[in-house]
Every structure is written in C-alpha cells, then in structure tokens.
Image (cartoon, rainbow, N blue to C red; front, side, top):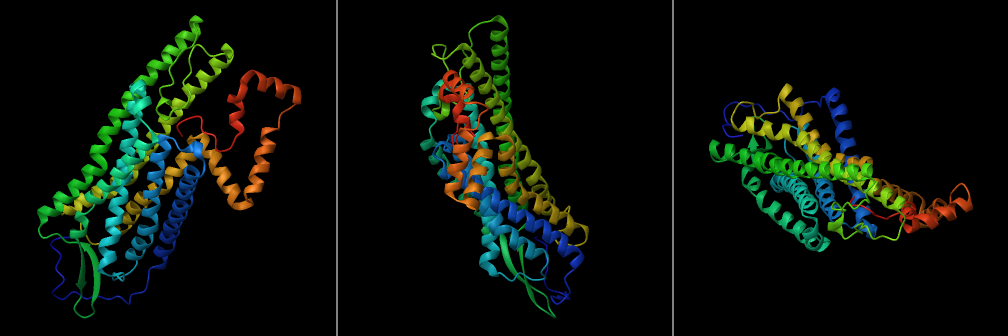
Amino acid sequence: MEGYDNSSDYQYDYDSDLPLEELIPVGLVYGATLLLGIIGNSLVIFSVSRYHQMKTITNTFLLSLASSDLLLVLVCIPVKFAGFFSYTWEFGEILCKGVHYVQNVSAICSVSTLTAMSLERYYAILHPMRAKYSCTVGRAKKAIIALWVVSLVLAAPIILGMEHVRVGTVRTGFWCIKQWPNPLLSKLYEIFMLCIILIIPSIIMTFAYASICKELWVVTRMSTFNESSGAEKHIPDVARSCDGTPVHTGGSEKSPVIRVKKSADDDKTRKQVIKMLIAIIVVFVICWAPILVNHVLIAFEILPFLHIGEYKHMREAFYVMAYANSCVNPIVYGFMSKNFRRTFKMALCRCLHGSQYVREWTFRRQNSTPSRASHQAYNHSTDAYEMSEYEYGTCKSDV
C-alpha cells in the first residue's frame, strides 16, 4: 500500500449506487460461510466441552482450532464484506487495526495448532512408550495456551502496518489500508506472514505425516503377516496410547476372535485419525495460499493494491476461501470421525428436543436388536467393548 498518494485531483464519491448484481451473490456466499462457520465450530466446541470422554489430546487441540476459527468468522467476515461494498471505512481507526489483528491471530493460531497436532501424532506413533507417560491432556492445554500467546505476539506487526487514511479532495472519506513507512518493510512483512502461516508449517507437517504414514504401513504389513501365518496378534495401539486408552495385549481373557476384531478396528482407527488430520492440513493450505501469495505480489508491486476491476472479484474469492477454511474443518470432522458424528447428532438433538429425548433415544438404540437371545449372546461374547458403540459421548479413539 506504499506508493499511495491521496493528494492531487482524486475525486472521491461515496454516494454511488451499490452494484446489486455483484452484491447479492457475494453476500449470499459470505453469509453462508458465516452461518456454517458459527454452527460447525460451535458444535465442535460444545461436543468436546460437554462430553467428558471426548476430551482426548487430539480433541483438545481441535477445540483450540475451532475457537480460533469461530473468532475469525465472527469478527472478520462481516467487516470484510462491508469493506468490499463501501466507499469509505466507517468503523474507525481502532477496528481498522483490531479486525486485521484478530484475523492474523486466528490464522497464526490455527496453523500453529495444526502443526502442534502433527508433532503430537508423530511423537505418539513413533515413540509410543515415552508418549504414553509424557503426552497428557494437561500438557496439551499448556501447549495451547503457549500457542495463543505466541500467536498474539507474532500478529502484532499488523497493528503498526494498518493505517486509517483520509482520502479525497472534493469529497472526503477514509480507507483502512496497509501503509508501511517504506517498501522494504512491506515486502519483509508479507514474506514473514507467508513463511509462518504456509511454508514453515507445511514443511513440518509434511515431515511428520510422511513419517507417520511410513510407520502405519509397517504396522499394517506386520498385522497382515501375523494373520496369514496364524500367529497371535500383538500389535501395539500406538495411535491411542498417548490418550491413556486401553492398549491390547496378548494376555487378554477375551477370545482370539475378539482380539482380531479389536486389532482390525484399531488399524481402521489409526488410518481414520491420520486421514482426518491430513485433510484438515490440505484444506488449510488450499484456502490460505491464494490470499497470502496475493499479498506478497502486491508488496512487490506486481499486482495493484486497489480493489478494482477483475482484481476486486479475484480478492473477494480469495478472502472467502480463507474464511471458508474456518467452516470446512467441522465438516471434515463430521465426515471422517465416527465419534464426532455421534456427538454432533447428540448436540443437535439436545438443542432441538431436549435432554429427555436424548436419554430416551439412547435407551432405544441400546435395546434395539433382532432378538433378546442373540442380544444376550452377543453381549456375553464381546463384553462392554461392542456395547460402547451405542453409547453417546463415548470416545474409543483419538477423535
């Protein structure tokens, strides 16, 4: 935004009619993004906070992620939408700096949380015995507090860069723009944001998840070999040991059939956890890369800083992509996590029908089987393990 000159014969006209053919579709998209972001992230926060057994290490990080996403959509989407279709900044200097600061805090905190989650999974899966005692929910909470503090500090430069500028000669108005003392600071700042939000976290997460995928492939091959050779299954539950959930051993009193089924479920759970986290990371990169690259190109004066012509439509799309990331994450949880699907349903039922309906619905599910005899035999052979699948709020995996 350096190089801008508000003098000369600039004619500022803030009485121009709004372009309804552009305002309506963009408003619908931004409005839908805001609504989905509020509902989805609120459900995540409620689900993890309300159900005790959902409070695992991974879900604790997801709670922080949902909180930062909810903050982003509530503060930034309405103001950014208004900024695109107004000819002056009507919110004052404090909001000019504050809104952009909150946006940066949320983005930095989100990617920092995703990076911390990948490192926690890396440590839990590649070093399960040490992680079993060193990885706790309490330490995860301390790490989240540290991430928020670091995010607050790293986002601070934008407060100095954003300026509330008076423009126009015939008619005057105000713009909220980035205006650094010299072009070098602008370039350094945009490169700094690109590195801490996109490049460095992407490198760390790629390393962590590539190592995890390699380890899971080795474990799966061992499991397949043991089954084909008829050996007793004894695959450590490395993906869940960090949360203190039961680890299967060869000395169980349950039948071999149950051990095989549980080990197969564990393999499925491991893959489900990794797929969900990788999906969140990929979506984050796709959503945030365009706007970050756009800012770098503006700083190097390759693109104009004014929202005019096709550049306005392009940036409207880039910003909504960045904000859409905040409402995509809960959808990823819902599609890829069985436990989140269960708690989402319970949260919606509780809001729509009340607690009594939820208790009655849960009781009916627990007792809905083809026959009483088969139900008793099934319970006798599988103990409480299989019944836990019908209990709402029960978390037998990390997510």
